[in-house]
Amino acid sequence: MLYRDFASQDDIDAQYNIERQVPDARRWLEFFVEASARTRSALACELDLAFGPTLAETLDIFPAARPDAPVVVFVHGGYWRRLSAKEFSFVAAGPVARGYTVVVTNYALCPAVSIGEITRQSRAALAWLYRHVQDFGGDPERIVVSGHSAGGHQVARLLATDWLGEYGLPPDLVKGGYAISGLFDLRPLRYSWLQPMIQLDGDTVLRESPQLQLPRTAAPLIAAVGGGESEEFHRQSRDYVAACQAVGLGAEYQVLGDCHHFNVIESLGEADGPLTDALCEFVASSID
Image 1 (tube, rainbow, N blue to C red):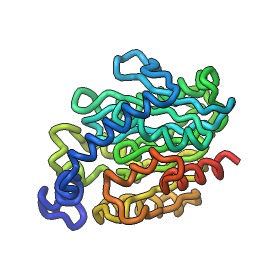
Image 2: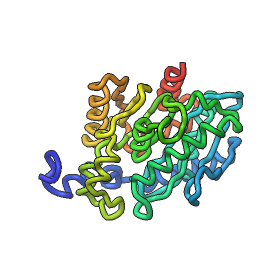
Image 3: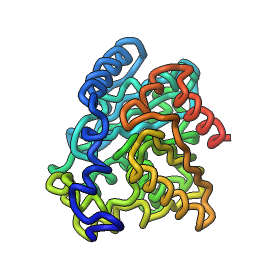
Image 4: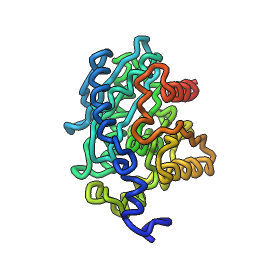
């Protein structure tokens, strides 16, 4: 066996290759692009703010109308090797309408950089936000992180950050994490069609698997998965939540209707969308 019950790469790919599971995947990516362009036109926003020394280290801020608003950070997906913050501007529409400042972060992609470097960039974005988001109407003491797919992986890595030791920032900088369709166990991906692009080795799998690097903070966590996603995506979230709960952390596994991997985040573009409701409820409870 390559890993667990998987005897071949094809077995693993069948669980993780989203394009094989969602026949109209291209249409959903086109929707993300179009909806995001509309969102950037409709909302006040500060785009391409540099938070680090490399060209990819930028973020987009969509301020709430109210001052000192809680901040929702969203980390985009794409299996660490495709897409950018710009395809995910649409996720700001729902939370901004509910009074939250939304920040969509960008990062460099594999194979030009490693997954470890992506984690470093996500951490640098949070550190920059803590120091600067007040300039854009956000409250640095009320930051919650969210993300989809590879971005869900980054949510878990941000929760496992030594903010005080590495950045001189409050250890509870992140008040909560809401990971959507996240990837927490990288071990099977080493044997997948992704390997030539993400180039996992044993050390990276150990360091960058949230399943093996649990949160350093007691901040609440939700690992949410669409009901129509593959069993491995559900297993990833269930196992990560169970590991967190086993050490006394407040973690919850959540199933989001019958959604597949792409339409699971669609309703973040709506003020009264079901995922907007779930995320805003989580944020409100995390910052109390």
